[in-house]
Amino acid sequence: MITAIVLIHAESDRIPETAQELADIDGVAEVYSCAGDVDLIAVVRVREYERIAEVVTGRINKTPGVVRTATHIAFKSYSRADVEAGFSIGE
Image 1 (cartoon, rainbow, N blue to C red):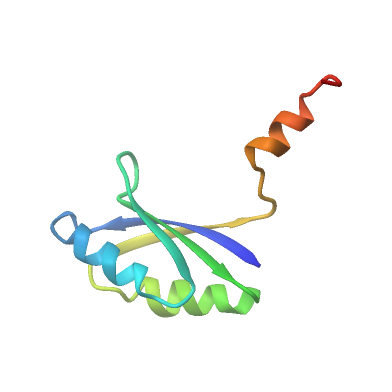
Image 2: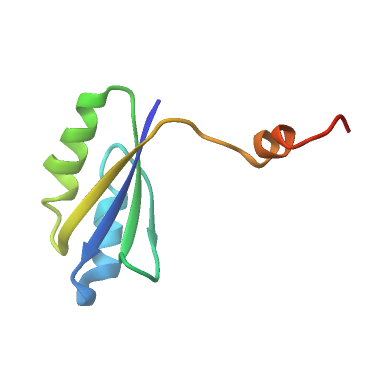
């Protein structure tokens, strides 16, 4: 499974509606509203790289309220157990 993290700048008066519309897109696993440099973060999970373009440019960027996006492809996932095991000294 390929994971992409999409940072989304949205129209401030449409954030809740935009977030819900994004969450309903096939391939979008999760949408978070957040404070900071971006308004929403969408986690996209697809089986082929080509689908990222379909989901992001074909659907997310065309969603009403989306102003601009920046997409980051995840290479590897780390869980708490993975990180703790990497720093373990034989416990």
